Length: 607
Ligand code: G6P
Image (cartoon, rainbow, N blue to C red; front, side):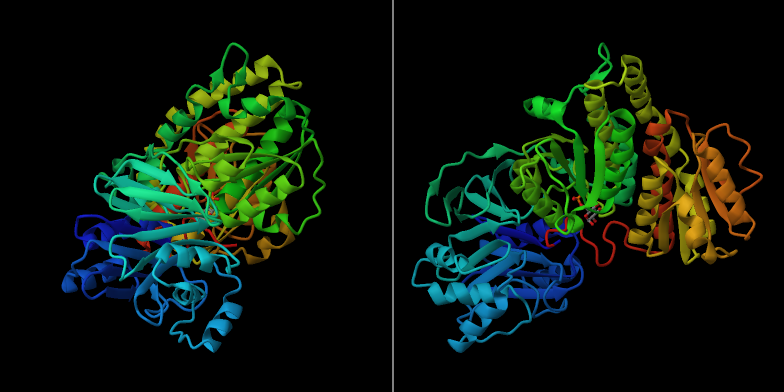
């Protein structure tokens, strides 16, 4: 979602800010803007891609060594130039970029309007610049600190003032801000990826903290004025991870990185002598985990589907009662959280607002809250009692791919760990560990079929609708496959539990409505074959995924894609890969912007 980058130092700011914005593009946005201080402040905004603002800035070539820039994903007010950030005050001296939502903006706007402030935009953000103006009397940081006390809602902000050409002030509550400290220059951003090229020394701001940045220096305090001493830490992400290399899109690159993603998820975590997983991040909560009776998994989007898979995995391998809940619905359920309840939040970004809200609620109710997060140091990672990092590496494509595979891998390890502490046998545990070790090689075998999946995409991509069906472990894969197709190719696709097909979707089946059937040879295979027959009887085209060597499906269906054999509980790690490739190629063939699909954001930081 929205992105912020700020710079103060000895270099011309414009190129650094534009480069930062490009690195934030993957988060999803619909307009952007930049403000640079010089003798006369410079402000430019543009609707559309960062390339549009870049073109304008390149033409104007503003000088100045301090500035802020923003990519906006519209919440309050359409994606227009006036609504794009940075926003100014009446004096035109303050420039402010904001991520998050100011919930009481209408009341603040009324008070400020009554006091004579003139508003020019439909945004909630603009009230902040006027509010700061109203408290400003020579000290920018103090004015911001005071203004934020009036604010309800969430924010990550960066502010500059033309009377303070050597300082950027940033603050956060609920929306991430990270500082990057270099030699004689300082940066701030909503995402470390915007800093990676300039410095590897970073500092994460906590909620309710404000920081003043000067060239090469930073000063943090809490909103209630307590000075905070915090050392910089070295950034783990290598700048190269943000590059495409020889791939045309990040999504394809990340699909091809999946064998390594699984290897990284497994590294150092397999204990063969005891047939169990070793998860260092959970050691501090071993006792409570041993006593747990009830697991609630909360997450959104692709991470939610990983959670659905985990429900089957935990139910198979442990005696826990498992519920999987959409984080956005968590607060509306009367979930019976007891002392022996564990809540597991799954999130790639570690910043998803609904997931964060759900975990805070679970903590309030006394549950042990665990996290499965990819981004190191993210808010969810920091706020959970304990957890595991997926170590999938930075994921840039909005459509999650390698993170999903990595989540499945670790969820399986978690279930194994809990299961072995109960009545899962050594043999069962060890069999799964050996199966897991085969997965990276098996994914590589599937990736080789990319061209075949492109041909299939070519044959099907003009269809307007798709049905994806699967049972048991393959049901979450059907949902994830349909999500991949709809989010990047804009083809309408529905994922269904195959057994539900007869309760509705079958009414849609005709020769122009293809079905993708997930039918590896497992315990539900025969039932899947019956569903396939029912679709064929209505002349619906079927593209079936099955286990390599199964020749019985080919006569029944239009096309077969084979994946290598493994334990049925591990097959989702394989069957999802052809679905990702199918979605990717369909989107490319339809001319879609694969890595930045319309209206979507990589990290959804508003509820
Ligand atoms: C957005 C992304 C999805 C992601 C979901 C949950 O919708 O586009 O790819 O699955 O958020 O994000 P999280 O970071 O919590 O896994």
